[in-house]
Image (tube, rainbow, N blue to C red; front, side, top):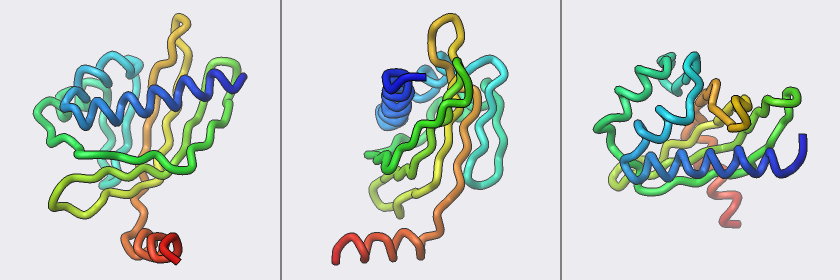
Amino acid sequence: MNEAAGAEVLALEHRGWQALCDGEGATFYGALMTQDAVIVLAHGYVLDRQTVIESLQGAASWDSYAIDQPEVLPLGSNQILLRYTGTGQRRGAPDFVALMSSVYVRVDGEWRLAHYQQTPVPRANTARASQRDQQ
């Protein structure tokens, strides 16, 4: 697996977040996800592809996002795990910060999302990290 493949999936992840900011998440993820893809959200819900599409239709958009410390791990010749700390911001709400992982598989020459999982980072940890960064 080469660096270009890692850059491709990281770019897809950014495009996904941007789609969520633009209110286009249902369309974007409907096209990106494999038919049997699963998303595991921070609050414990496990969603299949169709449920993801339905839940993103009319969902509140993010105002902005950040992908920090991305790491790409090849899982084989046609599979990649991307893990990072993701932050989503909405006006008037605390930042949503989670450890995120996405498994992409190459299908017919295109990267497709097969699995995504969020693990929330406790607010106390994010506050300490923010204080450290300011020192």
